[in-house]
Length: 334
Image (cartoon, rainbow, N blue to C red; front, side, top):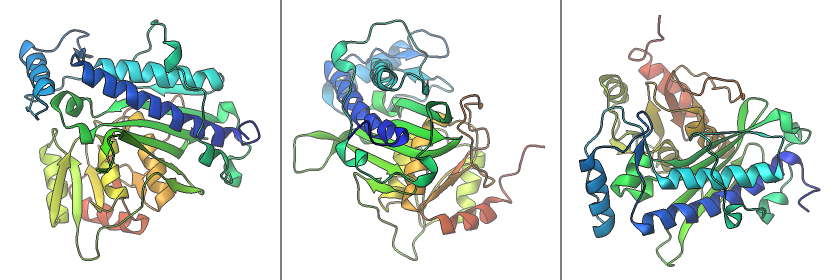
């Protein structure tokens, strides 16, 4: 069955299996109690206070808030190990496909049991949309955020943490995998779940829902609330604002009917933050663009920064409304 499915479908199915394995690795790092935190900007350990607070928080399973460290960009052993797992697993099966991960690649040997060769059988049986059936390895780029919400991971906000694998065909995000390593259904000791979406084929792993009519709920950043972000939120005059971490987690709120829109009208996110969420959201009938309504390109040579921010809506028909309302606040750079 695997070899008879179109290449694009096989990559999505394999990405689901890789995300599941990476999720276990991320949980194992957390259970070990030493996250191996470094600051990517300085390639050194973060402040002593930050490290000690994170260790105390893990030990006592509490949400000790680590002070916001300005523009520090943290990385943990969870980020590094999850990326090794995902890149090794996908590249072993699809050596000609371009894979772009958030973390720098290293020369560390990947343990054999981290390399996944299985695939999701349900996805393999899907009818591939006609426009992707002929896609070749050169048409496809895989964007990987091995641990979206690293700051939240170090602070104990584990429900904000996701693993993101986005599959772009001819520059557009059309396949997405979102894994929540610490998700609990409440009726099982088993942690983790995986959501996926293929534009034109559907979604899986969750039940799509929408905010009840007449209510407007916005989600935005938890830790980077600039005057521009606040002004855009105020322009909408929402009934409720959900300030949470992680681009993947914010889009999850849209997918499950907990928010109408996700707004972040400033640079900060990257292509690996939005490729998978955009694909899953689009597959459900939503829309994700920059703050001016333009789709981002996910070509292999595109700039990785989402320099014009992010606007995502659970319903594609609502997107124009949000663009119009915030147009007086968010101006293109001259």
